[in-house]
Amino acid sequence: MADLPTHTIVFEILTRLPAKDVGRSKSVCKQWYALLSTQDFVRIHCSRSVVSSNQRVLLIDDLTCSVRPIISNNNDYGPSSIVTFPFHHQNNDVSILSHLNGLLCVCLNHTYELLLWNPTTTAFKRLSTPDSHGFYINNLDAIGLYVDADDDYKVLHIKRRSCVLGVYVYSREVDSWRNIPFITRQEYLSPHFNWSAGTFCGGTLYFTVCECWIGGTNVVICFDVNSEQFKEISFPPVPSNGMVQGVLVNVKNVLHMFTSTGMFEMTINLWTLQGDYWIKVLSCPLIPPISLSLWCDITHYVTNGNWFVMTKLGKLFTIEMDMKPFECFYPVSWFRGFKGAVFVQTIVSPSI
Image (cartoon, rainbow, N blue to C red; front, side, top):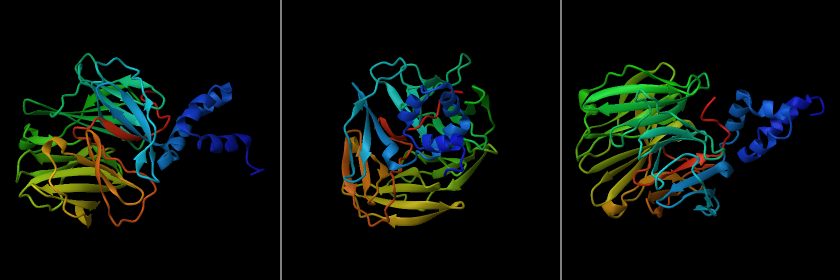
């Protein structure tokens, strides 16, 4: 250690600080401010922040927006801290569409505007433009947040308007939108198909595309973020004689999907993607009937292998599984009827 340059030692120490302490450290001196503002520092700090102690749950209701730490020892949330939105809103009408490395892509429901927001640093960036880019319509559009090989954070916006598909990419680096080609089956443009938010994993954004009735078509659309090419792969082989739902989740850079099928009793399976094919990892016991008013997604599973089934009111119940423990929570990108997200505290900026 004595042979290392002072600059290297300082860099190694500061990249391990919590995000809020990094913000405070910028005021120490001009040299530290310059160091902590470099893209290399932000990238390495972010890579070292993906641990359970830096994860937070953000919950939005009609009156408040709060952030809670996750206590992995007892599978619960810690005390809440009230968050003030740094942008104008009406009655907390903010929907969280996607999240990655501490950034949230959100929609202001009263104006349909898209924003990138880091709730840890409070910095945000409006993505809407005078030529109608960056406006999101619920149940028609799909959003995916990703970072490419050049470390440029981007937003993929899939628009469906009167059975016409438009696909646009926003680049944080150049602060602009552009159109990219996407040819798909005409029926997927129908509002009868429900597109999930994109889940980023291994250089690809994945979307579930599910027909909104029993026995309908279910597929997965893949977007390679570097070649900007799309392809379609099959859904896991689940029974189609009931309601079918697939929730994607990135676990240690391997794509998994929770599938729930059935009508009066739900069967939930966990699948992992190998190449273009799904391999079943495990199954859980049948879940008793759930009222449609409480219908929910499995939003994450925790260190001891339990799965939390979530509703808009919070935890409904826990499914105990005999799984190998993981060291942190793995959130999904899609919350149905639940305004919230699990995110990592980082210093990643929504703008350059």
